[in-house]
Image (spheres, rainbow over the protein chains, first blue to last red):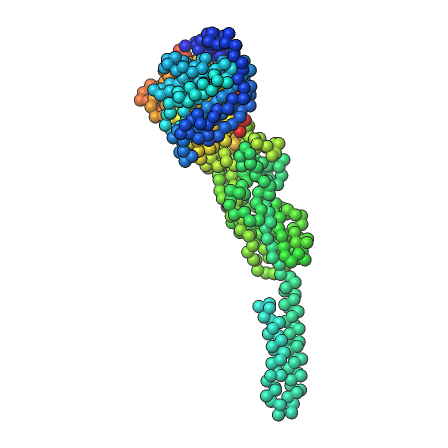
Length: 170
Length: 432
């Protein structure tokens, strides 16, 4: 395990561990326009309803962040899905936003999406466990962090794919 | 009775005529009749004068409003500046006529800051008839704020003068208590000028919170009102968890213990790699206390997962509202771990098998090597040399080299050099 003496060094190590330098290879020369004012349709989450949607102030490398919480039953917390959508002003800032996100995570290593054949986004990370209950990805200038946060783990891969399709259609 | 008296008087006036109408044969009946009438007339006049005199002196007093926090620039003789939550204020006066739920009339007092001072409330009273100029007022009951001694209140045009009259809480027991929540009831009574008997008026109910001393950041007293003034929704939990504690360390320990139990049905975010959900991205500098409170009340909040940053924010925020002086501060970066029991879990494990990139706890003083920590996120092995004992780190030194401390129980020797205090990053996250 690499050790750091300060937060900047820790960030640099995080980037190295996650092979940050290689992320750009997937999107270079695509010539895509920046995605803006994205709204995740509630109907994408079939069987769920939108519990709340909050706008967060722009922080770090994102210019606009929106947090969604979807649930199944108003009386229970058994199935909950949280989605953080961050719009950035460049592709590289979307990638930096993934690092921003992971700087608040305690795990030293974060599994890549490819490990479970998750094909969403330009760059994808997943969480730990049997089910795909966590997906963090960047598509163009957008960073998405999704996680099942209810008492019952929900496989969120289908929802992640729908959101990624939305971003590609824009 | 007041209405019957004049009627009786009139009947008495005619009684002799009725009696003597049947005795007309007697010669002196007319003389006696006149004499009776004069006597009875005098009696009636006396009755009317007495009745009028009493009527003129009777009154009806009522409590219109009560201010507990009547001096928002100080809290040494009155209540602290508080609010209900991020969006809702506690209006002053805290109690107004018609309120019956104690929670609608909250007040919080600092035990240490009020010691040796005369704590007061200010009360607005009304009186009928509006011509009445004074009455005595007192209240029994009052719980920790005590009963209220009688005081003569002046009135003008039906309203107390001054509008809010100061009453001393001479029988309060604030200084003799620890952290506390109590619903109190005052049974108010009044006595009109010249009257001997006390009459009941209103019964008022209030929810009183006692904290050890003035809340510390993120909670502020000035400016007021402000969304960072202490929230009663947080006091509800903090005062309950740290009930009867008289020391800051004791209060912080109780808060940390309750956070780790865990309240709110939360658990460590193993699946997400230990991501923060209540203090994390995208609002890293702030703690979503509203979402955590929702979780405590059984709502979804931000979901069941927490990490060390979330736990540090909760411990510090819920302790500092009681007057504790903790910091949310990190240690790092990139270090191995002994097996721990993470919050909400029951087995010894190394999460993900490869240690922490950083860790964050509630930390005292300058958040340095020799300063004590409160960790609501995990339990360490308190007995490394023998049978394993789960120990929640409560007010133990980070690592003062003289004893077996926090870092030595958390991090293997070879990795301790990477688990260093980061006091430059200590913070007290704003709540929202």
